[in-house]
Length: 56
Image (cartoon, rainbow, N blue to C red; front, side, top):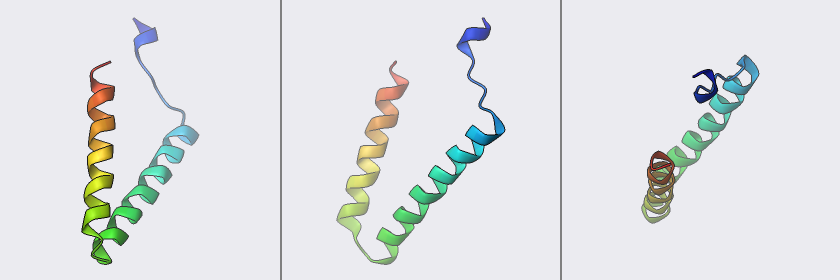
């Protein structure tokens, strides 16, 4: 079924990549600044969000 597939446009794809870029920069900055607790909490939240999305 075609309705089950999501194909982003080029603009949407680039927007998603920019969001990912910002997220990775934030994580790197936390690591560089030795903010390990903040880094761990952020990664745990992101992992939880992904796992919840996979259950849908």
